[in-house]
Image 1 (tube, helix red, strand yellow):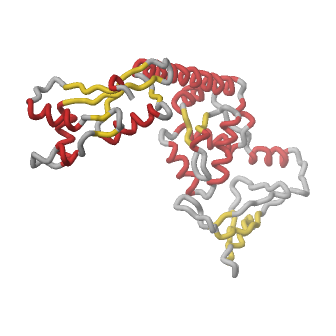
Image 2 (image 1 turned 60 degrees about the vertical axis):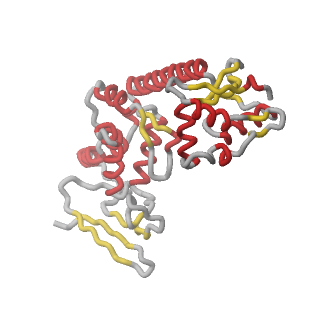
Amino acid sequence: MEEKRFKLVYDKAPVTDSQKQVIERYWDYDAVNKKFVGKAKEVFHNNDMSLVANLSLINSLSTMRMANLCKVCSNEFWLPVYSRTQFTHGITCHYDVPKYFTCEKCNLLLKQEKLARARREKAEIIENIREAYELKRYKSLTGFEYKVLVETLKNDHYNNTLRYYGDQGAHKAFIETLDKLNELHLLYINRESASEWYREILFIQETKDIFSAIPQYYPPSKQKMAHKIDDEHNPNPNFANELRFFLHTNTQKSELSPDFTTLIEIKEDIILRKGTTFTAGGWIKNNGGINVTIIPTEK
């Protein structure tokens, strides 16, 4: 490697002759034999300072710079190195496989391009969200799903909503609902954040602004549907008014998850009438699970 590939530059601070001598001895490199002329301990043997203190002094008074190739424009530019290890590594890279960096000018251009691309992507995402609300896709949601949307947008801190539904033992349904809202473009989730228990919602303030502009909406109520059936004197023998299920011990429990969980398959329509008092009971079984029954109280 030719000597022009590296250069020693003295900073503005005044440098004494003795300091300059130590600095030049430390950076004295034999380009032919590819090694430093003297070991660092030999360079500093005449003073009482530690190796770290000597290196700190050298770097405060001078800078060794090495020529590098910009991976964008392929022009040569100078980067500082602060130790012999960095210096040797830089030279080895030039001898074998060139180590490409990005010069300051190109780095600034890349950052500007990245920022512009992020702004375009954000604008496109927000426009998709706006269109979803204009198409009233929220009207396809169930009452629970719509409430998740409202609560998530209402809470400035997403974790408050997560904790709210976690405390109700509805974590799985909550996460699945967030994914559905994302698919409908009613909000936007950072897919890289997705885990079993977490979703990061982006652009939530912009989504709140769009949501606040829609007309007031109330999702269909199952109770109203049940009353409508009664009013029309059209009883359905397949309706039930009690619910029975089994809760399993949660073996993969975290601090946010419930102690017991289950999946319930509803095989018939169930009417829970407004104003009815229900009795709920649970029986602990030998396997640690709980049999739960919810039935209306006879008047």
